[in-house]
Image (cartoon, rainbow, N blue to C red; front, side, top):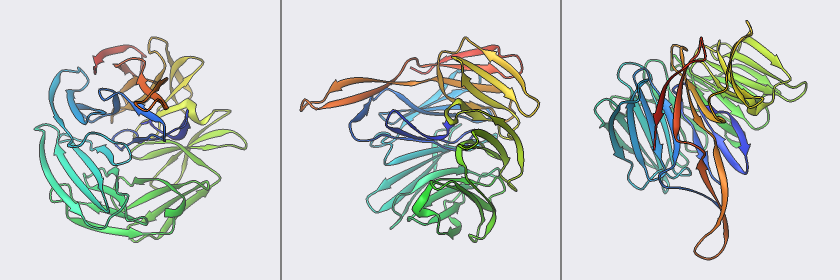
Length: 345
């Protein structure tokens, strides 16, 4: 989700997100805290909505109605510098929980319809492991060991392939290709590079930073001249562009890249570039995290994280992060009508 879903600095906090079934994590800097019951991550699959709280509670709801289905808890809580999450799409959705444990990485796959663990596996000597997301056919992607991208079987947790490259020193995020045959690296030096399972460069673009991305498309932000360009991840082909747009205004992109959600002029705008059809939704208050359903018909929106100053037990100042609202809005993309309101509190 730009969500998230984009890579940007928000009031001293790094928000690394993935959209539409990928993954995102909030990396909180020194002096930042969050309420243990705060919703820090959510995503949707075809039939379920998943929300994670700071205390590690994973709540599963029927999507889009919001009917509660089940919940379970991640041992040790949801610490952003240790745990990342990703959700697969399809009729049997799977949640990937990737936790850093000293110099090892633990991977757990949960069946979201039964809340049962399918795989619980430790990868020794894999430092910095995090969940990159899932391919369209349900294979899971994991980044770790400083310079490798791994593709895992969701059924067994077995390693299917692993690729090493030289992007790791400047890496922001890795996005799986939908066919599981490669991946795309986004880097801090403005380079976007697609690689095969063997690490071979398939295509690359320079002078961009990521605005947000989805299963098959990404939106790239260019500073000079200022613009956002939508590309197809398969081959890097440009799908659309919009001039004069700031990176943090674009909040979500649909799976195929043809629909976009912006927050601009204090309202939510849903577009269909390059056709430039727009719907303005004023009833959603300051949405920060958004994700399209896989078919692009619905958009789920959650309000912004806001900060408040406090002091810890030692009297040192810290900043507490809380959402202005825990009401998730499900919007019909074609009309802008709010179909459901789901209280995640």
